[in-house]
Length: 569
Ligand SMILES: Nc1ncnc2c1ncn2[C@@H]1O[C@H](COP(=O)(O)OP(=O)(O)OP(=O)(O)O)[C@@H](O)[C@H]1O
Image: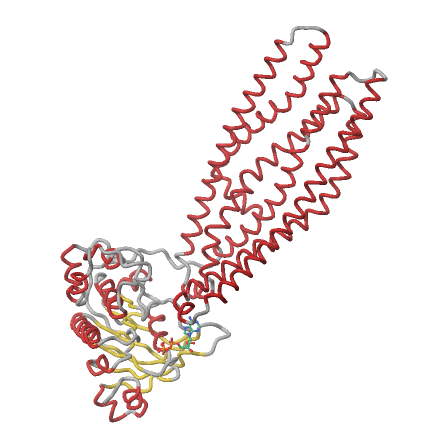
């Protein structure tokens, strides 16, 4: 894991080393200061001119400040670079994952990995590493300098520091544990808030705002409590460090005072020694901090790796293609389940759809209709049997080419944030204005475009709130058509459409079916009666295939479905 962490640093190592060197020079300038102060005191005591040592002191201060600032900037720069490459890698992988894997993961959690965990990497990889190195340098430097001043005083100091250091070492694991719990608590709060925001309308309609506010509030209180625990332990460690320095200061003052009065030690050396003593504090703190950051960074790395280690789909370009010939579909004894531990959804599904025309899939809820689409798009892989598109096994199609040949309209067709134009051009950004307008006309969206205040340039909102269910689906159909699909998969909207919208949708579907193959999961009679053939699915298999007229006579389930679901008169 540490190796993985360092892999992120490798491309930035030159700048990081330069930044680290500048930091070290800054530290060295800092270390020189007590020594220079000693010379000032010595010069003062001996009645010599203080000009030279004072100048040295000023130069050390200025160089130290400038060099440290430069080093700091380089560190931050590297940090941003590391976050950028980590985010790019992670997002690249995330958008190439298999649908099957993404379905298992929580969107809020994925988001936090890109925004939160990558930021934690920065802390450990830049400040963490570099500050720890420069802190160790400072620490050793200060101790060496102190040793040159007076060995006895150093011994007194180290004794106190080691004692308190032991105490801090005992506190550290507690800080770490509390910190992890605090991060989890914040995550939990995010999860409950996400739930409420996702179901915003349901929350309002159910009148449960107060309860949801309380639930999120409770989670926030738990996060605060965990945060307080961290604060408590950190303060204790701070007090211990502070006490260590004060006690060491008093001891050094007492022992040093005695040594000065007995003439073994000069006053200036005692002053310089005491200054070095206070120089020990920040590096100790930084080393402690570096340890905490390393733990956080490793935890973040683990979460990032979890995603990066998931298999990706092959990265092939998809998009508009030249061959617009409609293709047929054939399912041959397809067996499929969503997971090892899941029930079988398709138990030997077989049916055939010739190229062109309208085919409706009908059947009770849970029969496996949407799963047919998921398998055709290869969101999931079937376990046995064969699925042919255009006479070719879908496993032999390059994935990008297969998806390029299919148009897919989800039941709850999403309208993306942005303008209507952006929504239509989402899958085929390079089509001409003529083609765009033709698709708008074909999907009977011209009325809508006229009605909207800014036509195609109207922002249709984050959930397309300005559009009705029927309009949303026609926008999605237009979007799919602009890719010139050879087979259109349409999961018909179940939401009640008004008569005008239903008529329009039917017209659109029939018209599209004249040019390409349309496979529609049908929820209304108008679609079914218009269909060239109907595949009736039940319990993970195909029960009957025929036309509306033949099935009403021949298939009991179909008759029943038609009578209840499809509003038969
Ligand atoms: N992503 C998934 N992971 C696990 N199980 C799933 C998933 N999607 C669907 N299922 C299960 O597979 C079965 C068939 O679902 P499918 O959506 O194909 O049915 P359907 O005929 O389209 O039903 P509906 O008309 O209600 O949408 C259901 O029992 C469902 O719970």
